[in-house]
Image (cartoon, rainbow, N blue to C red):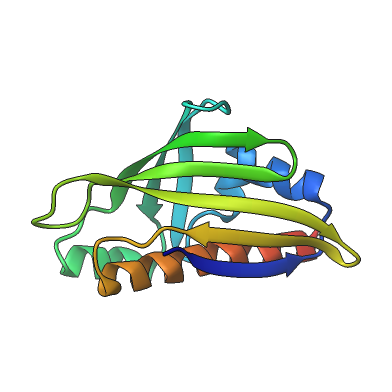
Length: 155
């Protein structure tokens, strides 16, 4: 059963689409505070890859990562499963960072709908292997949407 996260952002669907599907756009909002996202591959087509590296750059985040024996940079990969500009985007994330767990894939589906104030974003998120990791995933996705909302409201 999927989990749903929704936000309304003050930008038209075409702008939200651009921020979600370009390397420059993703780098502006994808990472949580104190981290940077660098896109290394973006093939916007079904079966295409999105590869990126998220790096701790904030002093507190770097200290946390080092204190917990975690790398400062983590590479991630997603595979696009659906592209319907500018209303629908879906991708499978490679979950290969869970200790003592075999890698697997997780599906996220995004729908963008024009509304009076901008764009309604609906994100349907397939759960991970347990409640703790699913909670972490949902918190990360919610943070992404909060970052996106803040970015477009500041433009």
